[in-house]
Picture 1 (cartoon, rainbow, N blue to C red):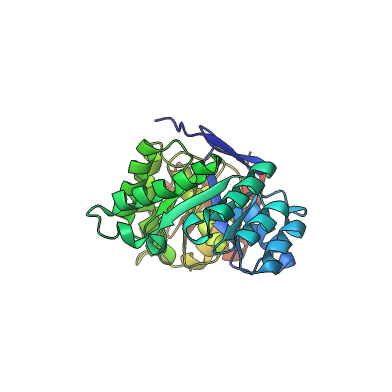
Picture 2 (tube, rainbow, N blue to C red; picture 1 turned 90 degrees about the vertical axis):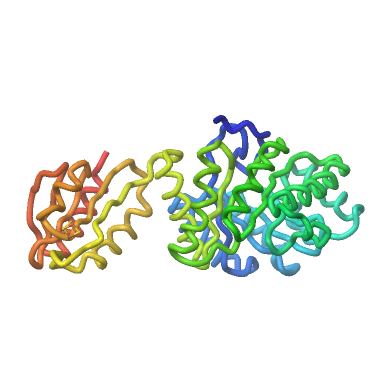
Length: 347
Ligand code: SF4
C-alpha cells in the first residue's frame, strides 16, 4: 500500500508521501551541553539516524538551538512542554520542527503565537497523544485506540483553528496492540504524516520486540512515515534497532545483515565476544552485505552459505569462508581484522 500522507519539510528532509521512512531518536543529554550534543549527533548520523529530537527544559536549551542548528545538517526537533515562549524561541533559533502538546502549552492565543512563528519559518509541528497525556474526558472510552484518536482530533482542530496544517501526528501507547489499533484508525481518519512508535517499550530485546509487534504490521500496511524505537538504552541502540527493523522488512537498503548461530555444545570459541566486535563495526557500514558469525565448522559455513563472508569457530581458531567456501584459518584477532578489511573492501 502506498504511503499517501501529506508531505512536510523537516530541515533538509521530506517527511510523508512516498518519501523514505525516516529514523529518529532523542538525545539523552541536556540540550544546552552543545558540544556533547554535536558529538552524539555525529555518531548517530554515522549509524543512519535522520532526525534528532532534543528536550527544551529551560531558556538555555531553547537558546542552544542557535548554535546547534548552525553546526549540524541533521534536522533538529525541539520537544517542548508547558512553555509557548520556549517553543517560539526554539523555532526562531533554527529548530527544523517542534513537538508540542497543545493541551499543556496554554491558551489558544499562545498556541496561535507558536503556529504563527512556525509558519513564518516553514517549521512543522508534531502533536500527539501518548499513554501519559490522554485527557481524563477520554478515560471512560471502551476502546482505548478510539480515545487516542478522538483526543488527537481535538488537538488537530485547535491547530487548524490557528490555520496551521503543517502537522505530524503521533499516538503512542505503551501497549503494542493499542498502538497498532490507534494508528490504523488515525491513518484512515487523517491526512497528516504519522510518527509511529510504542512509548515506554522497555529495554533491550523486550523494548525492541514490543515495538516490533506494533510497527511491523503498521509498516506492512503502508502506515508510518517516521519511526522511533523507544528503548531504555542509549539513543544509538534506538537507531540501530530502527534501521535493522526497516532493513529486515525490505524498507531500507544499504544496511548490512549479520547472521549468527545461537552457539551450542559444539562451540569452542568465544563467539559472543567476536559477534560484539563485528556487530559494533557493521553498525557503521552502509552496504548490502551479508556477514555470518557461526560457532563451528560442522554446520557453520553450510548453514550460512549465502553470506558474502563469514567466520566459523574451530578449535581456538576461526575458519574464514566466502559464499560457503573456506578460504583460510586464522586465530581470533587476525580473523576479526581480516573480516573487517574484507567488509571495508566489499563493493
Ligand atoms: Fe552449534 Fe555449530 Fe549450529 Fe552454531 S553452527 S549452533 S555451534 S552446530
